[in-house]
Length: 153
Image (cartoon, rainbow, N blue to C red; front, side):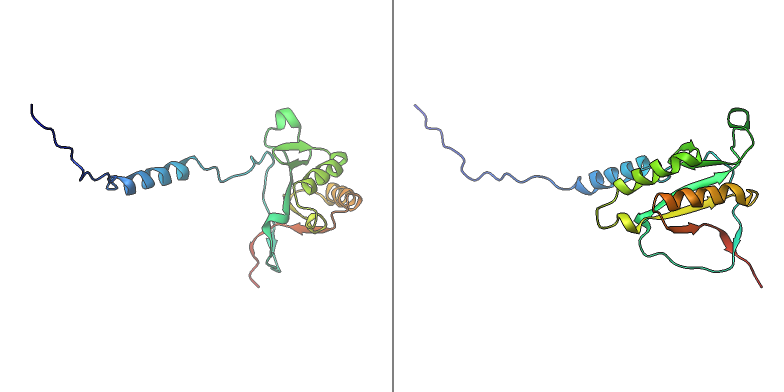
């Protein structure tokens, strides 16, 4: 009878030559599938130009309201409408919307919420005053008006 000898010098290394290719494929996959825009704007936006500029510290505390004539005038009419989170709302719904936005924040940050209003420059002051009144009722007193580039003097 013959004797069989066992091999004891076996190496169990994992080949890592394809690892960078896999990492780059994952990186490209996530870059392609990431959505950058949070909401679809349903109202027209021609923002006025600014005269003063102030930088914000925490952009996570900002909630956006869009005010303007609806893009789909056949469905929504030609009067200025308010858009919040991909939905057209009325002025009476602002209190509910502010409370929902505050619920998304932590307990310490709820009183620091800032409402950014992106208002079309063709909108009259009446609807804006109504929105400001509802925001005061909802205790959202930090208000920001968005604008485009600086006016040259």
